[in-house]
Image 1 (cartoon, rainbow, N blue to C red):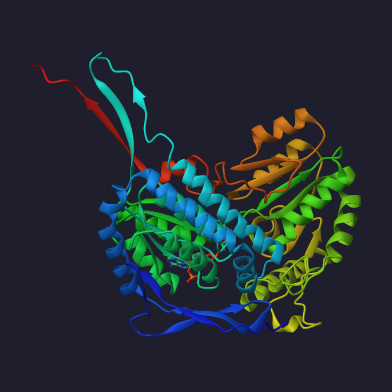
Image 2: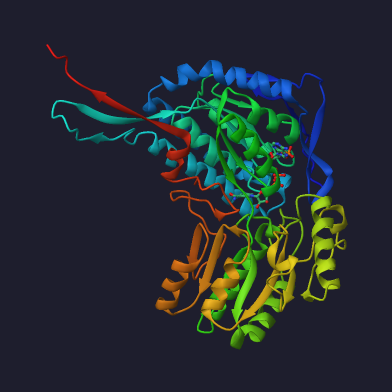
Length: 491
Ligand code: NAP
């Protein structure tokens, strides 16, 4: 599984310059399918570099907010064309550093192109509203103004799409940015940033600092000059950042974990439900915040459906994600793979019925990487750890229920509320589900992980901070409203 490409070293990008970490130290970005392969090397920065980047972003803020939205749109549009011309190479690098299949890696890169174009368009939309006033001579209107400096902290699992869907609206609406990408897959974000640099983004408008989350990320959230923070990652880290931001009154947006249910009613199209649930649970090795981790199935169908799931999951081809017939790649690293395998073992030891998978795979060269066999549990207790906690791996549990109402109650009985699916032919039950389900993204007859960039994205309850990303909703986070009354002089 070795791929001979020499590893480039990337510095931080601060104020329009590439700079190494002050200590000169670096860290490696490794291929999770073949941990001996170093894809690229990055600056192991700390709080000092974060501060320098915030200073650069603060200095560039006045100029960028006075740049016409049309000029900002042109840069985003140009960057989309640059990235599109590289979609194959960038997608391949994404697969090499993150481990999702090449089809998914290229697909995600294409999504970043789409996002740049969408926000190039959004930048040209009206920037406020004109209102009637109690006084007929008063000109009364609102302006959407940029926040100023925005700190963006992203996870490793969508290493180009998530930086894209945060950076593109931040820039489109006139903010300057400091990005701290995840340490396990920073290269994809650098490819995205390079497209923007080549498209003519002025120095200081977008800065990137790599290094440990606790040092670099925390500094971004603590610094008074950073007005808004957009974070996607684990609920645990998000909870800590929320407290720091709240203490100084910063605007913060959190997109966190999920424990997403797919409900299958007895009248569902079985093949459709099967395909969408297996894809939703296992693609990207289950490492999506929107992955399906609970299949809640009407009891009359549950045994048959579980058998079908079991054989489909057992037949998934797990291996090198660059391989043309691979369906499932590795997890992000050995620690993640060991953690998921240990969770599966402990659920089994606690009496859960493991039908297939769950162990580390080491044959056929897979010992070089972080591979776990996709796992299926039957008859899961909805209140067990397996039924409640996000495992962030290729693990699906079937929960039998007696009615659509019980299914919705079970689906809602978790602290998360990101996405949910229902499979049925019954329109009445579909509408009942849409009304009752506590999730920010709701699907009928499609997988929990489906999401398009032109509509709001985000969760309810513990999955989010009541804010939304993408689509028109992005404007709400990256701007603030100024209300303007203009009256004629009295004489
Ligand atoms: P994570 O460990 O929380 O890391 C996310 C980002 O935060 C990384 O850049 C990380 O830096 C940084 N970080 C870590 N500790 C920090 C700290 N103390 N202060 C400031 N920043 C810190 O999450 P992850 O493992 O990368 O991602 C997986 C999680 O993300 C899952 O729970 C998944 O559900 C969630 N997720 C949610 C969505 C959504 O939209 N709702 C989308 C994708 C993923 P380092 O990499 O340097 O540690």
